[in-house]
Image (cartoon, rainbow, N blue to C red; front, side, top):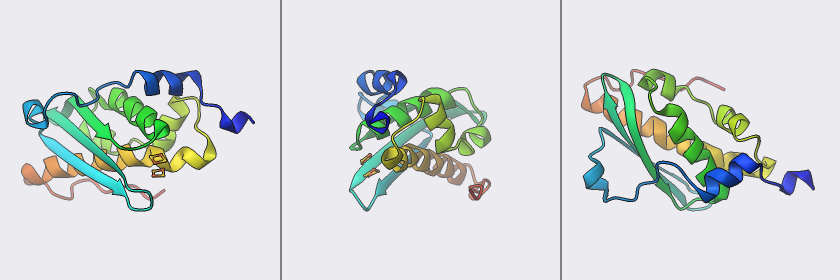
Amino acid sequence: MADWLYSDIVKDHFMNPRNVLMEDESTFAADGRGETGNIKCGDQMLVLLKIKDDVITDVRWKTYGCASAIASTSMLSETIKGMTIEDAYNVKPEDLVDKLGGLPNNKIHCSVLGDKALRAAIDDYLNKTGRSGLFKEEAT
Ligand code: FES
Ligand code: FES
């Protein structure tokens, strides 16, 4: 039955998700925008980044995903603030799952959504600054 339980950290991030986009998207005026969807289930994820000198200064996100997707992306948003875009690009869903105190096995794939949207947002920023394809996703 342990697999059914969410950790207290997951519950906290699900009940009080950090850095959710509440304002109009144009008000946030992101430097990088990434959107992804899981075609298997129709979940969508949007990640917006503010970036200064290649450091992430602020982040907003929103999703139609489930509790695990919300908790993982909330944790992701806290983790990447203040990181260089290169370090953020290399954050792994497994790292977030660890920080959350674990996720049920059949929910691990939900934690990948925010991560994918984050890399899309960084790629968008790199395109805009004439450095498209600078980072490659490390093979896992
Ligand atoms: Fe769809 Fe988790 S995001 S089940
Ligand atoms: Fe869609 Fe989990 S079912 S990400």
